[in-house]
Amino acid sequence: EIGVRLVGSEMCIRDRDSDKGLVAEAWGSTVFVSDGITTTTVDVETADIASMEFNKKGALVVHAVDGETTRSITYAWSK
Image (cartoon, rainbow, N blue to C red; front, side, top):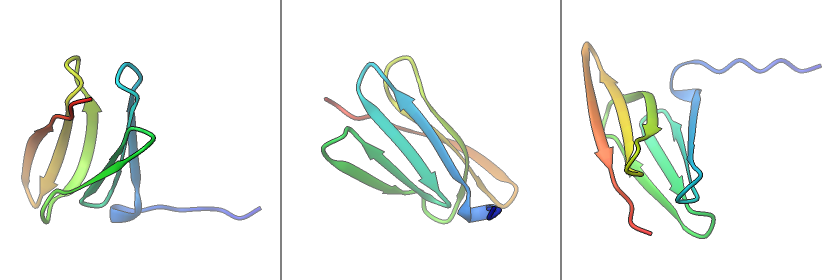
């Protein structure tokens, strides 16, 4: 058995919006959003992504940490 240990920027955060068919994955400071056909890549500057979720309107809300500052960034995709 091989153990896997992910830390810091190696951690992957995932969320899904079943209604719109979107899947989001975050690795470090980069978010990948896919509708199954195309993938959009968003770089959240130098901040590390702490969490993210699709809100009720289908927009992806990313909570990023840069040092001691936490900020929320909202991305919307039309389909």
